[in-house]
Length: 542
Image 1: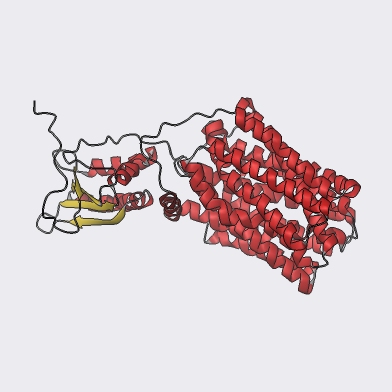
Image 2 (image 1 turned 90 degrees about the vertical axis):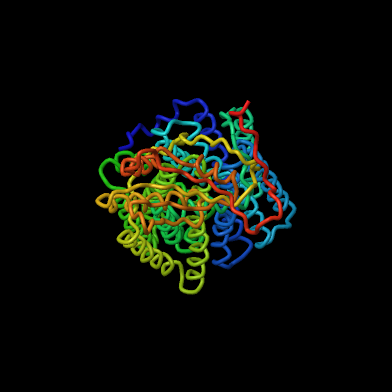
């Protein structure tokens, strides 16, 4: 069982403390910008669906670009990626302010510039999330994820009120200027941060190969598939409140930009409370129980908010919704972090964000359309029903508990000394591993091979098969292909300590006088007229 640490434990680490503080400043600016964009849309159009699309424009880029950003995070310097992303967001924020001051802004251009800002967020997030394991030790990762959520929601609790005051006093353009300035602290902090640089022994993966590897790893990991599916469902159903908040504030409640800000602030206060209780809740309830109760609690808030016409009551109803929001999403995030080895964690987190923000983008459009046709009350009630269905989905796609697996690199494989003059791109390569298995051990062997097959395919093997000798039935051969020699080396570099446990189970079942024999063979699709792969000189011969 992963040891629970204090929520504040990551703040003992200076690098995390500096980056977390700078992120909070940037988040504050982003929330102020969101208040300005959401309220400005209500002043330049009467369309409820257009207002809801502001939230969609903020979430859609994360769905579209997170996976490519995750591939970049796992193959390039994450600090550089974050600096570039923050600089792009600053430039888009400046453009949004200029357009607003000049009176050039239309509903479409507002959506496009919001999309551009959050495209930078999509580029930044996988690198930042994947860097947590480099900034704090493994046992502090859950607390670091929770602190990120608490920090964001702390800014959400005060940012909307500040944003509402700025918009009411100086207009939306001033909010956009504040957001542009908020990126400076984080850019400076990233420039000063000097993360450890891991020495790469293999050439960097191509972009397409890296994306495919992330998809393959996630698809072959049942725990990750369950988290992605549940995160998408929760995002689809629960985003209704955030997407329709400007409409709720201006319509049923008859409020102003300040009311919109304070409503979001109460949602943030609830999220802070949820984050502070996160550790205690995890001690008492399973991960699945936490998410189910969060779905039910959020659904109750939606139904009550749909029928509330009192500003003070609506503020109170948003607090439990905020707590349920952060309990669910921080749990999803931590589960992905602790179920994924470092070589692919950026891509796994990117796929998680693609699923959840894709759900939120679709939900923003869906609840906005329902509100347009049938009213806000029906949209909120519909989202409550969807949240109940999201809770029931746990009966089929149950969330795993936090992984106790050791996902550190096994570092057991040593590149064999080859006699052929192979190049990194030489291939395809066929691998065959011979085992001698007694008849009474066959059931245990097949069980271990089931795990071995999943690990092989997950880490890049192709055409995996298990063969049995017809004349000597105790001889079993595992066979698989890899495209090139360097992909074979990368395949073994990806093996974790937990994967090695499966290899040890197979070794104990092997009855041969020596270790299982490994054949490494390069394939030829045709028969050449001459040997195009000469032998290397034998180092044993003097």
